Each structure stands twice: as C-alpha cells, then as structure tokens.
Image 1 (cartoon, rainbow, N blue to C red):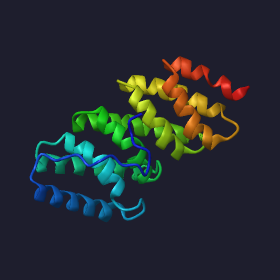
Image 2 (image 1 turned 180 degrees about the vertical axis):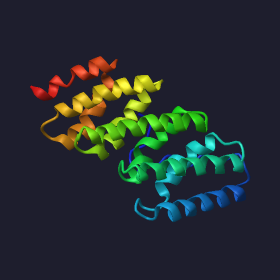
Image 3 (image 1 turned 90 degrees about the horizontal axis):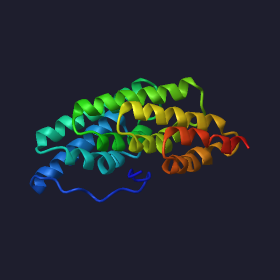
Length: 199
C-alpha cells in the first residue's frame, strides 16, 4: 500500500501556480476544513498533507482544485452522515487511495459509493474493530483492485478472514491480515488463509 501511515506525511507537492496563490489556496482550504469538521482530528493537517497533494496532481488551475476540494469534502461529510465512523478514519484510511485510483470526480464518486457500502456491510455483519478495517485493510484492498467487482471479491475474502479471528483481534486486523492481503495472489487464496486463525 502506498498510503502513508497516520502521522507520517509525504513532502508537499509543488503546485503549478505562483507561490502566493498556492499559500492563499492552502490557507482557505485548511480554514474551510476546520470550519466544517472542527479540531476532532488534529486540525486540517492530515487533509492538507495526505489528501491535498493528490488533489493538486489532478488540478490544472486554482478553480479546478477548488472543485475537487469541495466535492471531496462532501464525500467526507457523507461518511459521517451515514454513521460509518469517524471522518478522520476516512481521511487517513480510505480517501487517499481512492483519489489515487481515479482520474475524474465521477470516478471518485462511483468508487466512494462502493467503498462506503463495504464499510456499511462490515458494520451490518457486526465484525469488530471497524476503524482497523477502514485504516488498515480497506486501503490495501483498494490498491489491489482495478475494478469495483474485483474490490468486492477481495473484500468478501478479507471479511471471511476477519470473522475467523478469535485472539489478538486488533493486532491481527491491523498488522497480520494486511500482510496476508499483500501476499495473496487472488481473493480465493486470501480466503483460504482464514484457516490460519482457526488452528
């Protein structure tokens, strides 16, 4: 997975505009983030350092960046409105790999809809530690998938593995299962690894 771990931010990406415009836009975007989401996730730093560089790559003008930013913040709002979890988990875990996976806002919205349905399914199945799934497992699955159908297949296999975990649940969901996902060549092979936890 290419997504930086929480607390480890990549270096800023140069914008194709003059420095004064860059600074002004970053201030506006950061202030807007804090106004909308408050300081519940350590201010706007995760958004500015993880999400914003990806949005800049997709923007050829300040207006285009503002459009991406507006739409992405609506996706974050929607995650909270659906009561799927903390908006900060969505920003740290899912959002950056989703943006990397897509080139247009329409693509991003389509992938986002699928991913949110997978998080909802995780909660409906009453699997434990949903925040670990969002932060550690789902980003790996997004990186492994080239289509929504492929993502759903990987996700079903991952949930089978998660449901087989009985001991050290947090450590297994945060560390062991993501490693299994990296090593598996297909969803069936990943699902077969659930036997590892039932021995």
